[in-house]
Structures are given as C-alpha cells and as structure tokens.
Amino acid sequence: MDPLRLTLAAARARLQRGELRPLDLVEAVLVRAESVQHKLHAFLWLDPDRARAEARKVAHQGPSGPLWGIPVTLKDLIAEEGAPFTCGSGRRSALRADRDAEVTRRLREAGVVFVGRAHLHEFAYGVTNENPHFGPARNPWDPERSPGGSSGGSAVAVATGCALASLGTDTGGSVRIPAALCGVVGFKPTYGLVPRKGVFPLAPSLDHVGPLGRTVEDVALVLEVLVGAPGRYTAGLSSGVGGLRVGVPGGAFWQLAAEGVLERFEEAVRLLERQGARRVDVDFPWEPASAAATAILMVEASWVHLEGLREDPMAFGPDVRERLLVGLAIPAERYVRALSVRRTLARRAWDLFRDGVDVLATPTTPIPAPRLGQITTRLRGQERETRALLTRFTNPFNLLGLPALSVPCGLVEGLPVGLQLVGGPGHEATVLAAGWAFERARGPFPTPRV
Image 1 (cartoon, rainbow, N blue to C red):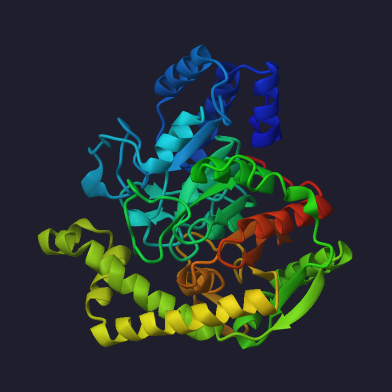
Image 2 (cartoon, rainbow, N blue to C red):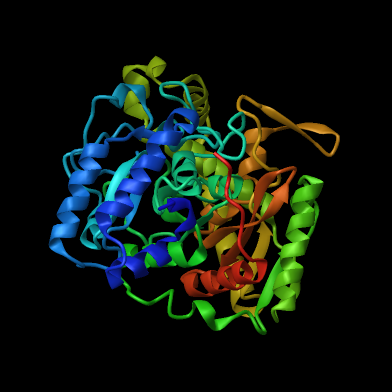
C-alpha cells in the first residue's frame, strides 16, 4: 500500500468498512516516514515502536471515533503526553510533555494514531524552517529549497505520505505558507474557534491552530474533530460556488509577486468563474493590516520569551534572538496604535463580507519555495527580504482573525504555489466549500517524487 495514493477521507472509509486495518495503514506510513526522514527531516522525533503500540491499542478498541486508525503528526509546539515538547528549541531538547494539549486530546478521542513530532522553525518564529538546533526541514519538491514555516515539517509529512494529516499553528501564515510551498492544503480557522490550551504561544492574539491535509475534505474532517462538530463542514462541501461573490483585491500590494504566481492565480479565479462564481474587485487597506500584524507579533513574541531572554539570550538561534530583541525595543505607543488599527480594519472587513463579497481570493505567497539560506529574493527588479515576502499575503488575516485556506493551484518552474481563500468570521463552511469546488474543477494535483 502506498500512503501517497490515499487521502484521509479515502482511508477513513476503508477503515470503517473493514477493508483496511489500522496496523497496516500505520505500518505503511512508518515505512514511508523512515525512507524520507534522512532526506527531508520532516520529524524532530519519530518513534516507530511507540506508533505501532498506539495502532495496536486503537485496533483493539475497535472503530471508536470519526478518525479511527488515521495516522497524524503534531507540530512539536503542540503538547502530546509522553512525547518530546521541544518547540524547536535546543534548550528544550530533553523536555517531554506531561499531558496532552486540548486539540491532542480531541484527536486521540477521535481515534487517531500519532506517528511523530513534526519539525518547525524555532519557537515557530520564522517561515523557512531553517532551525539552527536541529537542522533544516527540506522541501519535497526540491530538497535544496525551504518547505516554508513555521509548520514546515507538518507540510512535508503530509506531502510525502508520512502522515494523512498534521496539525500546525499559524501566527502570520505558518500553516498556509508551508502548505502552498509543499503542494498540500492548509487551513487557518477563525481566531479562537480551535482551542489553544497546551499549545506553546508565539503571539497570543494572533495564534491559530489549524490542520494540513492532502485535500480540502481531509482538513474539513480534522477541523470537525477539533471543534467537536460532526458534519458541520463536510455536509456542505458539495454546495458549489454558483452565485458566490469572489473578491479579488487590486493595487500594488497584491502585484508584488512573481509573474508565474500571478498567472496561476488568475487561472484559478477564472476556473472559479467557470463554476458559477462572480468576480468582484475589492479595495481594502492591506498594507496597514500587514504592518499592524507585524508590530503586534514582534511585541507579543518578545513578551512570551522575556524570561528566557533574561536568563540566556544566547540559547536562542541568531535569527529568532534578533527578532526578539527588536521586539523588546518597539515602543508601547506603536503596539497600542497597531491594536487600534486592528479594531478599525476588523470592522471594515466585517462590513466587506457582509455587504460585498462571500470570499476573498489571493495568492497564498508571492513566490514559490525559496532556496535554503536565501535571505533576499529578486522581484520586480529589486532585492526583497524573503521572510517578508512569504508572509505578505497571509499575515493580514491573522490580524483580522478570519478563516483562510490555502489550496494548491499549479506549478511555477516545477514548484507548487497556492490559492488563498478567505471568509468572514465564522464562515469556515463557505471557505471550505469554495476550496472544494476549486479543487474538484482543478483535478488531481501531482505529488513530489521523493
């Protein structure tokens, strides 16, 4: 059995019909994981014996939940009792969690089998997954390139069949960016919908927990477990996009992107239009939203790590330490002003979704996967900071707390790029249905040859 050929939804159906045993599925995933781990480093911890023991326990219990027997990974920022809880930090390398995070508990009760701890950027504070303590995770489409971050290991695991789903966190794009760069689906729900208890924070007022999977249906199934609402999102997936108002932002903010990315995006929007959606031009102050999100993230992250900075600043990797120290120097006035901007823009965004559009469509990232160590990227004749480019189209929606989906929409120079679909607060079902309609119209997406 090749786990790369199975979606979570397909595996779930076979397990529930008795055509597939949890032990066989988990074994296939573990064989795959052990074969690619040395090439791509998707995991910070992989314990096959523990996973097999969990699979035997789940099998003995019998079908007991909506994700019974499904192999899943957790970003090593999400507590799992008895497993490492490094958060990508060298100073936490010997630490193990003494209890499950709330989302871990819900997944466990749903019958999943945890197969490993997914690699991440140190303390989730970065978008390249280049970790100075554990080495980089690598993109399965080109191991010399970044998988994106900070949930890079989660995306690599799903893209390569090392898990049928993974759970990551998203503070400025950390689920959607790696999903786009690795050719899988990633979803950031409305702020606060998924509980964060037991998840190590980066910037508490921007942090979201969200799933990654092979398909939109897969992430919808996981999301239903995370929020305790069977059928809430999957029941309406096939509703289609007939008459759906799809907002497409204009202006210079969205034009700062590689030509190939813009071409794939326009193709995606036209595909939605052919399915019955209606394109609506949208004007919104995205630049202030992005700037406010950055300011809030930097101040809150420095507050979270204040004690660690006082104890031993050199324990942090150079890139994370630099950003934490810069965050300490940001005046309180700038933080308060950013919070005020957030309130104003949130009201405008709610008005936009109430009166103007049903979903927004944007590229997920302005560029495909950069090379490892690529600090700047040449775009439109200028050198731009790669880190800022990767979060450019995602972090406004962390500021606004809106549900946002990344679904693969094509290849640029052999590398995947994503279509981002965003909805109004609490409108997860609308976003997922639009993503499912696009995915069905697009057809099967290729998998990396690893």
